[in-house]
Length: 137
Image 1 (tube, one colour):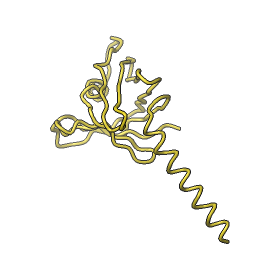
Image 2: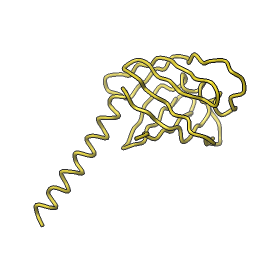
Image 3: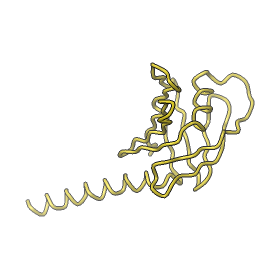
Image 4: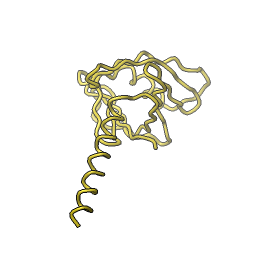
């Protein structure tokens, strides 16, 4: 019984370390948008479809909106709690939703990272805005 408990605890510790490691590096991770709070807004917006933000390598990211695709660059600090995202360059097909347009614009406004397990929050503490994300497996 002690061996089982010991192995279970070891498994939980390894899982926790694995989740933390994923947040320390965004490289090759994909995150589904679950919430968006615009600057100084009083309500939270929720997507009606899957918007997936992909951190491709140590410097580039992409997101597929309703019709358009966007890409840009990002940098994080060594501590992993600050992020700088360039304004995104997007294709110009018509008719992305208001939510998608707000999301694309808001990404470059985010300056902080907070992560816990499979959740990631990009936020701009000055404007009280954020984007809540969930890891895509």
